[in-house]
Image (cartoon, rainbow, N blue to C red; front, side, top):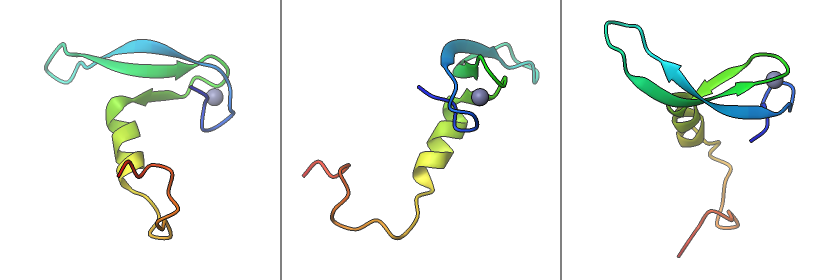
Length: 62
Ligand SMILES: [Zn+2]
């Protein structure tokens, strides 16, 4: 896992949600710039792909 901003080392860290609940969310923190990513951010980034991907995508399993 590398930081999308500075390509630094990111460590797995549980993020605490204080918005009325005390859920613990899996996330990552950059040791270099302090960038914090959580599963929601990663999911959103992965789901929003550029429409330029074609059949040559390595993610195709079938
Ligand atoms: Zn960083």
